[in-house]
Image (cartoon, rainbow, N blue to C red):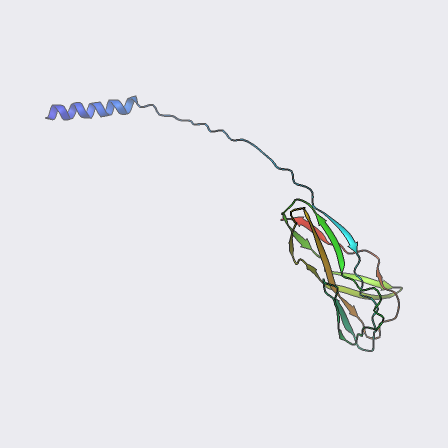
Length: 169
């Protein structure tokens, strides 16, 4: 029996030495890329707070992204509203892709030496949007106009337009 055990053990060792050991292996992969339609944004409507009445008390005029005005403090809205509009932008790009929306922190509007600050920008959609199956979406932007106490009358405009930026997620 000892002899059979030794033969069996030697056979196993011989098989182990005859098994080929691979020190290297190779696999293959393909490379690919998909070029997507560049995202673009085009302004279609400017932000306009319309006619605003100022008193001896500071206040604000808020335009929502839907174009609805409201006031705080000593600001009034005259019966003749003038042109009132939230800003509107057309975004185009790759169908069904999502994108981030970046709004400005503030912009200064001026009439001669007199200034007002526009800030607290909001948008619809807020923060991110999704392009339609046709690769399009409209973004509307509202903001807050800060009117000073006894703000001087005049037509106030921004010397530099404000930027709304879109970028694929």
